[in-house]
Length: 181
Image (cartoon, rainbow, N blue to C red):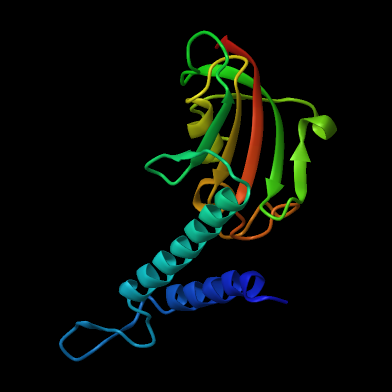
């Protein structure tokens, strides 16, 4: 077992322990004491460190695979391979995608080859926030690649099936159809 598979579990345990001790006790002046609590600054520091590691992994992957990609303010990496035609996808539209979801090590987690195209109403949730953000950059017929850090994908716990905790995922998509709702 490597550090990347155990680290999220340790962090989750620390968070659960801290949350269970949040009530604290009161001293004689009626003020709460900080008994056994981990300061918020510690959580922020741990999270910042994890995000920096994820960023370095993505940068290394992009460099090793000689990809031309840009980033958004949220941390989504995207590369548009084919522009498509027409107007960009908008919130409130129904988009249909051919897709493949992989881990950075190349493991294929899900694909439209196995489960059919993915269709969803943009802006309503139900899919990864990174995917929602990414499709808004695309036009019908576009082909693109998105690299999503965990906070834009499946987060701290993964999807309880194919995607592990704190996984960086690679989405390769083709916009098959865009319809108004």
